[in-house]
Length: 186
Ligand SMILES: Cc1cc2nc3c(=O)[nH]c(=O)nc-3n(C[C@H](O)[C@H](O)[C@H](O)COP(=O)(O)O)c2cc1C
Image (cartoon, rainbow, N blue to C red):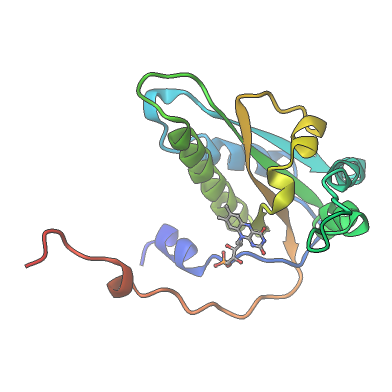
C-alpha cells in the first residue's frame, strides 16, 4: 500500500491535544500542501490565521461575544472563553468569495475545505494531530468582526492543532459499497 493511502486510511481527529505545536518549518510545509487544493479558475480563495500563546486568550474573548444568555441551549460565556485552550494552536481556515462568473461561492468554500484536509494530513505526517471544529462561533457576526473578516469572507473551520495525548478508539470506517454506485445501474 502506498504511503499516502496508508496515511489517509489511518488518519484520525484528536480532541485531546497538548504542546508542542508545529514549528515554523512544519507550518510552512503544511500550508504549501494546503495551497495545492483543487481550485477552480485559480482564484486562491483562502487565507489562514494561526493563533497560539496569548492569541488563544484573545480568541477566547472573541468567542465569548457569541454567548447568548437568552438562549438556554447556547454555550455559556465561560465555556466559550475557554474553548481555544483545547489545543496549543488554532488555525482558522477562511474562504474568500470573489465575484467570478464561473465560480460560485460554494466552490471557493470547497476549495478551502480541501486545503484544510491537506493541511491536516501534512501535519499528521510530521507527528502532529488536528481536529476540525465549527459550531456557532464559526458563523456568529461578533466572531467574524473580532477576527477582522471582510463581508466576502466566511470561516470554513477552526483546526485545533497540537500533539495527541491519547489515541481515540478507531472509528469503524464507512464501507464504500454502502455509499458508491455505478450509474446508470446495470
Ligand atoms: C466542517 C466540519 C465541522 C466540524 N465541526 C465539528 C465540531 O464543531 N465539533 C466536533 O466535535 N466535531 C466537528 N467535526 C468533526 C470532527 O472534526 C471529526 O471529523 C469527527 O469527530 C470524526 O473523527 P475522524 O475525523 O477521526 O473520523 C467537524 C468536521 C467538519 C468537516
